[in-house]
Image (cartoon, rainbow, N blue to C red; front, side):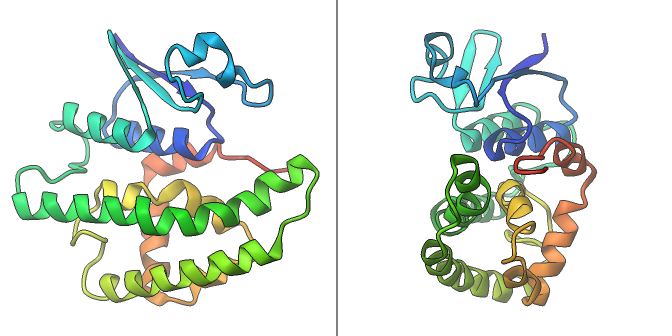
Length: 217
């Protein structure tokens, strides 16, 4: 039975899970959720995720939400196929993957998400991007990226010389961020730039990026 993924291809969190599924070469059925009609806030969907957010993964009688939890489950269940995203054969490497997964969710995401929101979501709501919010978060993001630049000067990827969930989790928001006028913040750091060019060119993510057209005209 194929996994069922409820979400939208343009969604950052849905695309995070899709990238993981493609890396593991797992068959899944994408069941579209219409965000613009607030389908995710209606009782049928709320029965799957009471917080009313996409994506949701169904694997038989198991229902999961929160994209990072879903990728962890997929990487663990399908550990024998595709790219080893959690390095579970090496305790130290696995621990480092977990560290950088936390860094992405606790440091990187809070800085980059508001910038992406201002450039992509605010205009749809009839508002102009708030430069004050953008500038404040660019300063935060720059400090995070300084740490990344130093780390990536000594290893190819964040947790070591291997691609993992720690890198994959950065893909969706960075993809949209690189379409904004702020992309130079990444490009001016050579090791960060090389890392981004590497992970964003992976076949699994290139499949996903085809549907990431939020804000395109």
